[in-house]
Amino acid sequence: MDISNTRLKELLDKYLDGTASAEEISEVDAWYASFASHKGVTEQLNADRQVALEQLLFSRIHREISQAQAPLRVLRSRARYWWAAASVAVLLAAGGVYYAVNRMAEQGVAGTMITETVEKGNIRKITLPDSSIIWLNADSKIRYAQQHGREIWLEGEGYFEIAPRQEEGFLVHTGQLDVQVLGTSFNIDAYAPADSITVTVSSGKVAVRTEKNTDVAIAANQQAVYKATADSINRYDISAADFGAWREGLLVFKNASFESIARTLERRYKAHIRFDGQKTASALLSARFGKDEPIKDILRMLCDIYGFNYRKEPGSEEYLVYDAQPHH
Image 1: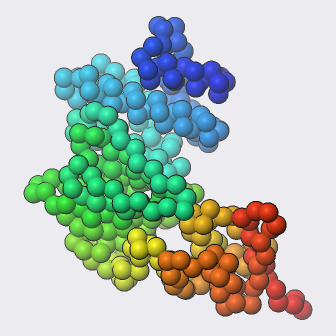
Image 2: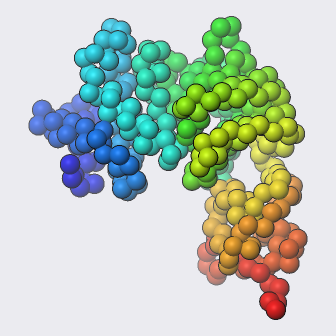
Image 3: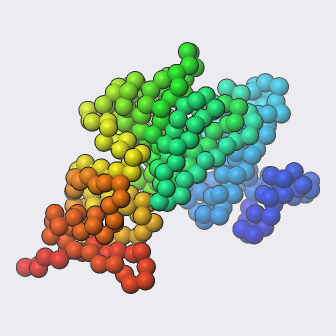
């Protein structure tokens, strides 16, 4: 169903406020249902419609759960909506948004959804209702139900210190990956549109799984790296302290491409970094920088390793990294 962005926003505002007429609700339902039968349809959506779809999913899912006497009743009486929502969850997973609709219904998660957001250039410490602590890195976001804060949806990067509760786990959804824990501390790097998600454990143990139920257990000073293109999880032994150093404002890079380092710098310094070609973008670097290091000094030191150079575009926060060496 084709609805203009302006009309869609108007309908969703009324729907979420509970002021939509019967005709307007039917219009939203028709738009909502159309996603269930079109594989890959979310790839055709612009940013406004992605946000609108996200709002509608969360609103409808939690409204229907909270009104139900039992989860099974919701599944029977509103089967078409749950089927549609589950289909959209699969479509949206590759874009970094994963809803786990069936698990939410089974566990009876209800109530208001809380969203915590951190803008570029900032780091934020958040205490959950169960006393667990999350540090959110720049340009990151989490969501959780107000009445059940031990199930989290993460976009971006977060460091978790989970308060243990006997026989009650803690679940983090991010992209196509789920992380199940009991009481531990760990870091998750799941920035989009990167094709990998990294889970690093500082203490305790976690179980990492994909939607296909591939389970990988990792312990302290181990890391699981999920590659979306291969749908695989690999485990490595590492020094976990380096991967949580960003909480103190430090920047630590281990054998990282200049391009991936640039993405981190962009989030930290609210800048934009371009490269003159694949040689500069793919150069592998290891480095450690202090909390108050200016971006120009960081770029200078990184460029010096390979003999590259950079320049800042006048009147902007845009930088170009280029190969300064003569070509033969």
